[in-house]
Amino acid sequence: MAALPVYHWNLAPDGYATYRQLRARGLRPGGQGVAAQMERPRRHRGPLVAYLYRIDRAKPVRPMTAARWAALAKANAAQRWCPSCRRDAGYRIPRSHGVCGLCVHHEEQRVA
Ligand SMILES: [Zn+2]
Image (cartoon, rainbow, N blue to C red; front, side):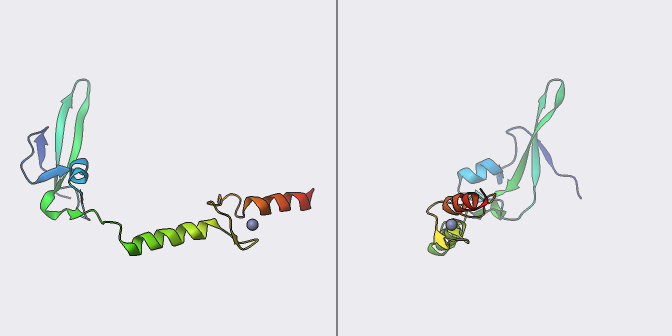
């Protein structure tokens, strides 16, 4: 791996931004690797390092489309669906239980 250019803190050339700065512009690295880094010397410790990405290679943060909302709703619904009584529990069923509270209750009664 080639060595990354290292810039002094806040002296990075135009066209580079940290992940946080990208997010503030509604961008994400978009698969690109770290392009450079900034370092700020600290006393008695190694320098503070920030990784920089190229703004021209950044991609917009994907907006929530109708299809993505639908996929999310479907995933949520699947997590709410009780495989034992085959009903929508109305809340996300904890994976440790695997079934809804009612079924856990019935199961406990059966064991008792
Ligand atoms: Zn159930």
